[in-house]
Length: 327
Image (cartoon, rainbow, N blue to C red; front, side, top):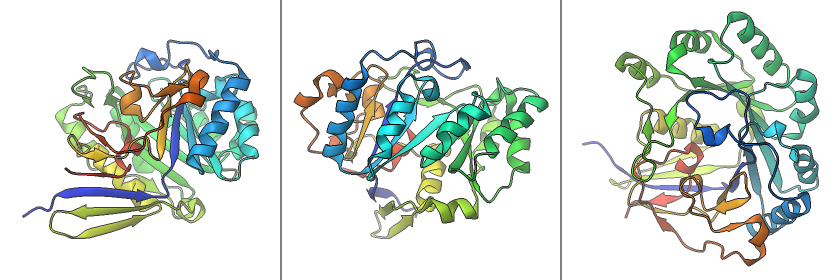
């Protein structure tokens, strides 16, 4: 009889997912327009932004911010945020970037990140020459910071991606085959996998696991510990990169369903949108369910209890790891 997962408990997992802008030059067909059709110009001044960060630092004590977009490195305050975090020993930054900027530009900020997540978009990087140049540029920073490469698994470029995945072996890199998720398909009731994959493609993709280099694991020193509890009373303890590998496998095999569970969103994590609106998690922010914003952050009623999940899918991968239990 198959055992059933009934609890996920993660310690040392405090993070803020910050979508700093909604502008990106790539305009990928599988990314909703809300992630690339806007502007890089912030709707708040730097003093407001800096104060909001101070409030969050004080409230949540320590952890990391993941900056994404859009393209976060085009955001006017990106350098200022990096400088601010230099003076915060309890907080780190992870930047998710399409790495479209020049190598000279990238080298000005790469080492100031605890980790860089480089998103490879094959619909734009769509020739052998473009792919070679992109990988040469990205791999040149692997000594300066932890480097993760996300292969955005566009079904229209499936064979090219599969060749890259099969040929790629680098002990310093975390290579992730990222299944494309339809985030905005009938968002109120269902968030699922895009239907452009053929049955054969979907089957192959479901067998691919992240390739996590041994040197990446040694350098990461991630303090996260996740305990999984099953209905037969057994437990499984995951540490460091084993936790993230398990999370990615849950996502690609479509086992990320926790409807009805009691989830601790907002207690150790937040989501911030390009306008400075703050939500307990991406699942709430994508539905415009906010608890505060940068302008009114001093009057925020911060979450102090678990939330019952009412959604079909936990579509933001890191939120799979947020502590939760089946009710």
